[in-house]
Image (cartoon, rainbow, N blue to C red; front, side, top):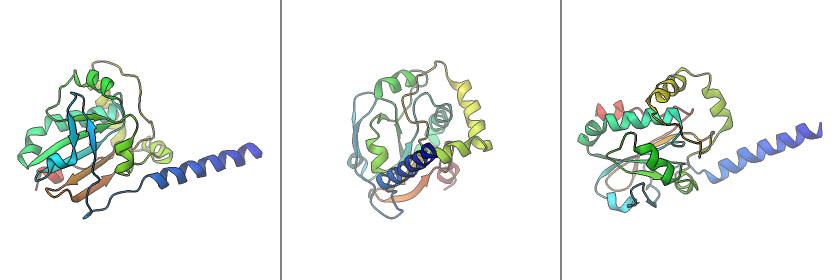
Length: 199
């Protein structure tokens, strides 16, 4: 009985702590400023994109098959997304060295940033959720993305990110204002690219 109560306290505290440190951004508000080093050693910061639209995508880690599938989708649709005036920036919980190895498989035409300390995830309120991660196993879309993403890997990568991290996508306008936010409800839930490509 004591063990069950202790476990319940840990779960409640974990959920509370995650919610306390993950303040989600809001549409119409200024995007959180960030500065980080990408996989090629360039400094990337929000201000350098002022006057341009940004599609900012948060992923789990380099060895995640679902993230691999979405990353390939962004690379394949890069020209179409760019033609709509968007710059793409991808954030992973992996460190930059792991990401470099991963990106050797399919070099991207836009920056990838390793955020192994989850600094940018906290700035943008990107959550972790045990419950939503478990629920993903019963949803068709994440399972399909996982299967396709596994086939796209050339190498295997050690997991160096959190298994319960959910994806998130942000559309930031020329004045650094959040125009659209998409906080994933499961591990494969991303902003539909059709909403960019069809507008």
